[in-house]
Length: 534
Image 1 (tube, rainbow, N blue to C red):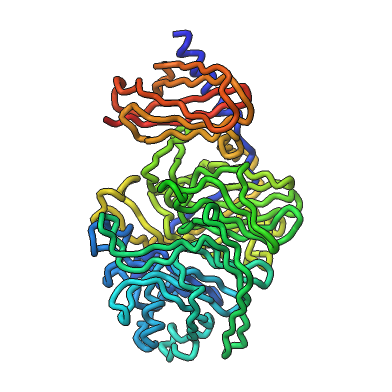
Image 2 (cartoon, rainbow, N blue to C red; image 1 turned 30 degrees about the horizontal axis):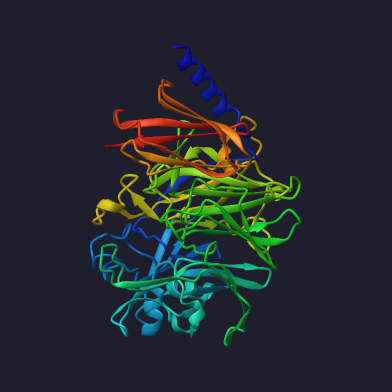
């Protein structure tokens, strides 16, 4: 009984020592537009209070059955205009445009960025009638947003507002297109050729770019010219796709980007936990920070305070290797859908840390969704919101739209198309300042060096626990039930600096369910939930 009480006290203290008075709180309010269908992994631009929605999929998570995924019926073959204030929508078919434009505009996971009144779209994965197969398009499209929106609303000609060029550097899907100062950055992604098939005997080839590609665009409204600059190549750290690359303001006030997480690590089918910081001269991998929540692309927004010299990026749901359960990190290497809303903070000394917000999405949503920002917000040139210029206690940040709605956390291995769908849900996202009682939970592992990982998880009771030591240390590994009852304690003397692995084969006799693993060193502690499933 003593051991139970002692462990419970330690656990309670550990969970409650790492919290922060929140710099702001988030509220989400659902709204709906009659007749607006679901869509995910789309591109968007906006002007005069209206959105232009392009491409994406009308179904949910891609199916596992050979030749069933990314079927033609799931293509979005129209342009959609949405007015979130009057709750109206308009559509126009793509049929008046050239076949080359139609095919790329129907694709999914395009890279896109709006500069002024022009939306630039590169790549995307879809069906090519010329190849009679699926491909990643090697083209860029420039779209005049305001004129296109007016043409769709008024049912007039679209052709004058679309231009397309061919360039093999743009044959990318699942990357992100952003801008630092006047230079465009095409970050990560891959070239996927052929029909997706996760079974044996693949029907495709897949090549990661492993690059940050940089270029300048000259566009006078008629002529579209690209000047490519030297790319950064890194097959270890830039081997990423389907993730969040978000504009940032760095502590010195300069513009930059951060590539958060992404998939897949070169040697294992799991997300990256680290991030890549990109400025106008170089990129650096931040190995002192780990992001445990919101690994795949999801709705997000960046906000910076000059007064506090603090950068925050807020992420909404999606897919992640970890999620929170009553204050404990749950590691699930099947990488489930999650409801987590979290923020990553960068302080004036450049230190980054992750906080879980007390609010969640109402369902398993967010993957492949977008946060379409309020055009009236005070923003930097790169779109980062100016926190200090928000004069009201409550501010409309923007709207989350679309994405995948999943019926349960883990559907990938059973997915036949009925377990998820494309969401048509819209959420107003509101930021509330000066709410002194609000507390965000610090994910201590995000700033720690211990980096505890168990694999496999779930397991049958036999697994490996890997952890990192910044210096030689005695290590205590404790296993317990959720009630706090300790099932096993292992003491390891003078473990060496660096990566250490402990193999556990003694939990096979425990009943199926959830347990805690806790690792204590002379410098820090990590605790996670493990799942035993025979």
